[in-house]
Length: 430
Ligand SMILES: *Cc1c(COP(=O)(O)O)cnc(C)c1O
Image (cartoon, rainbow, N blue to C red):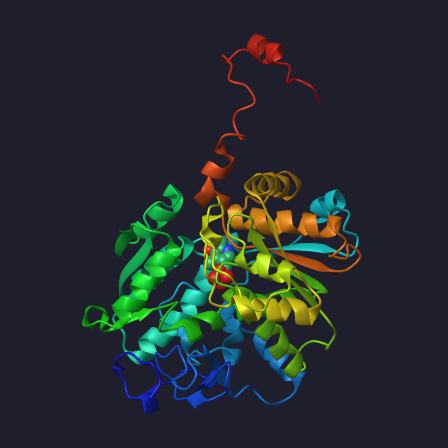
């Protein structure tokens, strides 16, 4: 038996579309679809294995293009039932891929620079993608309460998705998050619990709750539903390639919290190649962290295969996971693809938020400051090739982390409502 919480529905009736089984990332052992997350033999993480569609790439491309303008256009490649688009859910995805020519000029990128702007999702972060998939798993397994341990954005995404799906929600966050994240997590009417501790404490608490009768019937999107949840990040890979005209980018810069998103974007790119939907050419994946929580970057630079946990201290709270579950896999991917993992300090994060805002009119949360700042640093270090097509992820909305830039983003002048006063302020140049 794998590590498992009570299953309400019979596994044979579970319909998650092309998802065929769970398989262990370490030893390959397979398990029936269920709310499992660790291999019974080796405790490795489980991931979804598929019967991917057969048939011609052209047909599949056409079928996807005819689908809805959200992640469900990729339903044939996701662990969701085929009628998923008809169910009550938030329909995230198909966010803008912005050609960032002004930023490119500023950074000296000549090969094409794009920002994949996931602030456009229903709760203004990329987390709506992963939660939407976890909700389908929760429905399939008969869970009635949706839960998570969160650095902020996930709590809001779970609260909103549960409200739409008609499920109860109870989510857990570190008690000292930004006001924007706390309000977003509470406003949808579910239960919100602040834990006195950091994210790693919250996560440990949730793991205990799952093993206790108190947590019975609860689907924790990023714990016992984690294999399904993770698959939502593949849609970023699918969208980026489709939006580039069914082409792989040469380089991607992706933020790292637990590392799940980065590893699943790589999985998505590999699937597109396998299915013949894009031409098989090399791409490089770069990971981005905040210096104040940079366990993966530190391991990359030291040439280590294991990630030493850190105690986070950074304004990039959405990325503040000191003990990232997928850290070792991120290291593998960065090294295998010829990429790197880099970090920037809080001041560089703020500068990068303002750089993106001033050049492209995109207001990113601190995580977006991390990816843009790391992109700049990698170009300066000669690690990222400015002559190649590069996609930088902005995974959240600056309105949720106002404090990061509030002190340096104020009115230029405050004046009486008179032309004389305006003239005196010296702003009347053309
Ligand atoms: C959760 C989150 C990420 C990435 O998280 P992973 O755990 O690495 O998948 C990136 N950006 C933002 C804004 C997030 O909230």
